[in-house]
Length: 416
Image 1 (cartoon, rainbow, N blue to C red):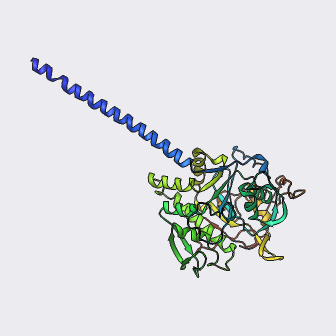
Image 2: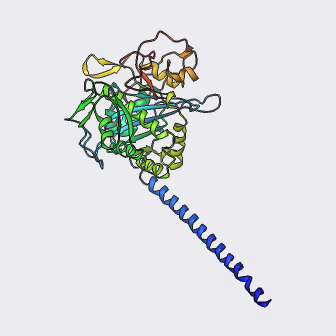
Image 3: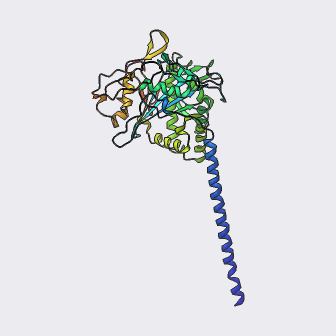
């Protein structure tokens, strides 16, 4: 009897020991997980470069909220050509060390309800007014404004802030955020997602002397250095101008967006971290996007979009009679920005069919400043009017194939 009484406490003691060990193990795992999360957070955020976007930079008023209190979102994407700290720097011409220019400028407009978006490319060779800006290398130095200057000079002389001011003065759209993307981003991001499928239209890309890219017509999966070659190449396509490169860049961005937002790509924690690292290591943003919650919020806004409702377009242009190597705003240039200021999708686009209105706002242009250094404020929204006759221009939704799908005609003039 006594022996049996002594035998019972041992299992209870053993169970207590197991419970204690389990509790301590779980506690340690929780602490380790929390520590790892904190480390990963600091690691990711420590890579992001930021520049303050003060109110004095803005040349356009904030967008008005809709009936539900929501406002559209305008983000300026700038492709940085600096060679500082970049690998694969033998690709085409770029800025010298310590300077910065941009061959790629895309204005991303996301509607107030986050249902559709327009990605509008602005040609680097566009001749347009540039406001007075602070020098990007010395904030104490003022760069005089100009009535007519190459668009990409804004980035070269005044950095992202001057680019924001120039775009706002040109379009009348308030830029909420900017994202400057380096060479490395194209390489690292495509590698992180296992490559991006792009379609090369006939006759293919043949540029052994500049970018080194040689691709036959058809579908190709590219990543790493080859992805950078693809977005940088212009000599191997069409007439060898920046205008042909714009269409290839739009196709690349469309394919990359589809890959990143596709089911399964970001479900793997390792892939998710690699994507986050590729992004945060290769961008400069305004201080409104310098936190992980802000970036996650932006990602959620974008991830909710369907590629069918993302429209890519080039701002309408005409060749400059004074210089065949430059372009000027073409017919429909002002109408494009008027539509976006009124938060209207491109006419003829899938988003217009699903979410648009039957009337279009009357085309207006931002008021010209009194001098190149003055701020320009766009006029009050005009009374909507019925659409005019359609003038052919090219626009593609994010799910259209650049090789086989016909572009969507939209009533904007100028070159496609």
